[in-house]
Length: 538
Image (cartoon, rainbow, N blue to C red; front, side, top):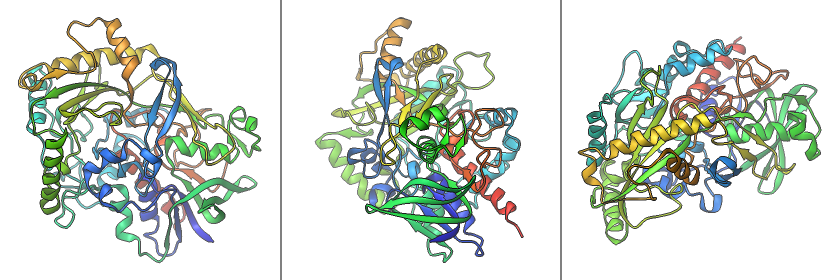
């Protein structure tokens, strides 16, 4: 089969690209996705993420594991990624966060012309259908529904009040370029009457309304195995579906959108990258690009947890299950209640040092006990607060385990390989615990979990962090945009030294933004879609 554009990966970026490029009826677009369509109740109901996050069976979640991490006592970290149309936006906490405006100014300063805050902001606005904001920073005509939380729990209001009692400023908009402060996250959730309270993934926002376009073909449960070349031009994609090998040809471009962990893997499988990462596996080199799979950055996260007597929270047990069934009926009828919650309801972006020019830690306040990515459950009711280091110095890699395209990539974030990240995490954990032990928050605590206690030394904090910290799911940077020797794509997201091939996903971020990465990934795709349209304008 032949198409003008072949998009590999139907996640946040791929869904956006497919919808935008197929707006032109004169071009043909094919979207190739390894997972399924993702239309069941598990994806529509926000609480379904609790069932999908642990990755049992890898049916809708790649559920990758890292290489053993020396900085985490040799533990193998967990890397869940969505395996379905919509990608990780179909299984995440739905938080709509853009980061700090200076994050994009950093990109521009690194040689990524056109990627400063002022140039990116119009594409955030273009993508957005915001329930309560329409101004110089927000839009209400885009495909992506962005909502106020339907039913935040009383304990989340107490968290915000406790933070302001510690002199952290209140924040009503984390997305106007300056996100310092504490408040409630907005979420990617439908606020229209017909889907009120349902998750608004990139697929439900962008793809589902246009699936009947005659120039758009969507192939699911199809695993890309190799990019095909004629000389230095990418001309096709080999893929496997139902144990059968097939190929697609692209007359104009192939757009790789499989994310920060799998885009470099597919490039390496195709002979593109650092020879030391490729030739030992018996793969012939097509094009040398030393930055492929390098520059991996991720948000390392540490969680504080508490048991509580507050039954307004999520609870596990007979009473909690009965309440959840009642909540399901409420959500089904009104789109509100516990089932509509992102669970990570409370937000804070804080500075561990007042002299900093922007926040360096982020808090996610969660209305349940979170332990080992919801793979270890606790009976009864509880709450948690995550703290992550926003701009880590540690850098890792994604490489091949072998030449088998069905194998998982070798993921090595090298967490805490730079001690500065540990020092920031210790400061952030102390600040977070202080908030949680301040009224009105303190009264909710029945018992603190995980062995954390008063008056811990920095050495004790370090032991706790190395024993329990892990990702909060924001890997980026492995196909970085730029003009230096390790850059993989140029500012138009074209792969350096090749034609007919772009990478459009979180892997192109040269540095990690100070926040959740889903909104920025969609912005990147919106911006690149316009670039491509201009390139092929008649």
